[in-house]
Image (cartoon, rainbow, N blue to C red; front, side):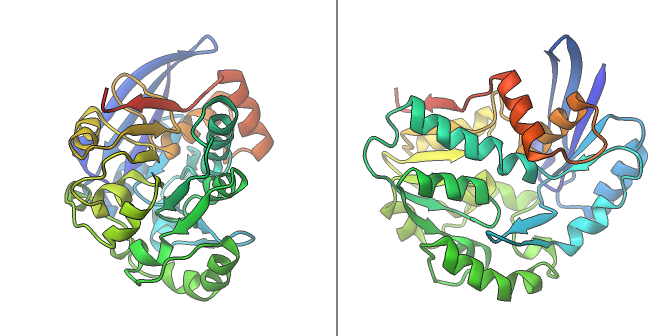
Length: 300
């Protein structure tokens, strides 16, 4: 049995293990949280390096994207280097393929976009593929990169403007401690509403679940959430906040959906790869597995 381990900077309360059989091969897929402890992440990766088939780097990204450029996080690179033998991926390969494909599938196979939608995407630099797919679907976009990452009260409405600002800010942001810009560890369980009017003004709230949960208001009646990495407890929280529909871009696996980092690690393992695969290879595997977005009507 092959083993895929997602080691996350997030809370250990969200840990999960499943056993799958895909294309005749068995896989043990697990997520292990380190409660915001980067040194623990490094130690765990070093201990498991060469003993497991693929790592997912969870709770943080190695790269963020600004349309035509990508920028690296210094903290993530330090953790990345701990893996010497086992391939390690951060999910960015699937964010640019699976998530783009998921929005295109919703456009083709559902009535979600039968009328133009207003979308708040928490961070387009974190999910460029999703941002471009929403724009292609005719959505009116609000990008929350400045609002929610840096707490600067300036919404962005075009990727062109985002790219111009990112070229100035991203090299600086990449040098900051990752915990300053993203909720890690126990912060992932604490809700601190921020810039609430943008949540209320849009039909769809999309992006990283921890960003959404951290900053969403107490109620969002009738809204649609497009995200991943949700547990059964998260579904109950969203129900109580009157969310109408949850759409996850990664499939449910025995009670929860994993993050893109774990799913990407699984695909790398299936392909026998030693590093991130090409975009074409990801699309090929996604077609072979026939993955589709999960749609959950929360208020039925």
